[in-house]
Image (tube, rainbow, N blue to C red; front, top):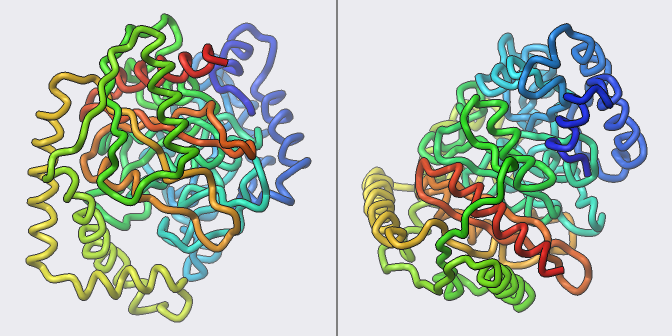
Length: 421
């Protein structure tokens, strides 16, 4: 994998140039893209041209390559949203996040594979850790591409679990910021109350660096060792249980954090929080039906089965059920704020287990949907694996708008796991 932070230091020192970093990416792509299939559109020529632009060294991303999930509009690369309906579609303008990346000195290397309209129908991408396993979804190409060393930074989006889960399956860091920290203007909408733009990198410090560079916010966590956090461990999940391997991984992470002098305590979710998971599905269905109504009316026969089912379930959802789901979400956010009064973060599995074998499913987002509904920052921590060597991701869940403390706690746990050996 390519460390964004490591590359930034080498670019700052003059050891590397933006053009030579593109060459590193191109070499990795040439070796493995044919088997992994991370790209919807690869634009090495455009990246090499952009890498020659003056003054890149004075910008936060220093000309570093960035890949974009193919639901973000780009004015110079086709944007197809993973859909046959939009084959060859070329927007006139960039999405807001894309513009921020360009202004920060990022070099766009291409668009990555997404499931259709960032829903659940699998794309072509395979997991680079083991090609027989899913990379997750819907940000499959972005997560797999970082894991394969194709690029150091990539964008993703999460409406259910589409940043945290693929990061977990591919053994990398995934950062779902607080709701709307990264703009979604110009990103294909499925659920306007839930869609959240996120970032992928090799490690927690890498996604923090990328987030800081793109937003201009104080989000970097690499300069100093973070303070010991107060950690609540959610072992008793109010949904179908995690695998034994995942439960063991959670226990390992908690023990490592405790050995590092973190204050660790087990918790259970209150009934309102435990029951709020269903509200995510109701909101996604209702809003997805309306967000994709035109595509359904004009191109249903070109849509994947899962998207059609989403839309039809949404039209079958009553206004009353939708309004009740939104009220439930509001109540649950207040309950979460009360629950976390004595903690900095919650530690939980990122997924039920390792990436499932087979490419017919992107896996389950059960362990992610509640936190997306809450709008809280979540970070997948890499570093653990099952006996077969498949990654097992642990997520750190923070308070709304406390993104830097959440990243710091994630770095603490990541470092504690690494020190454990």
